[in-house]
Length: 68
Image (spheres, rainbow, N blue to C red):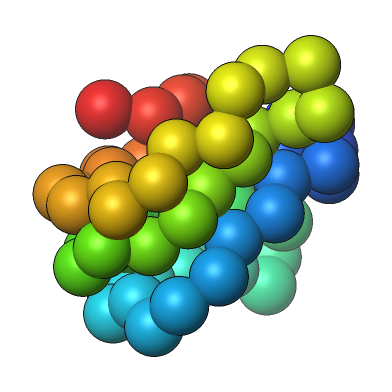
């Protein structure tokens, strides 16, 4: 579903997360996901090619279609 878009991501510190996953058993191709991750001063690096974010704060929302 995500194509491993965050396969190389690294993070440290505590985070709060919420996730809603709908798995229609009769039609798994219609699976949906909605969630968020709240960062409270974390270190975050999306990939080895991107800079490390230090003391990252905020909320990252996501669905099966992408990030917001």
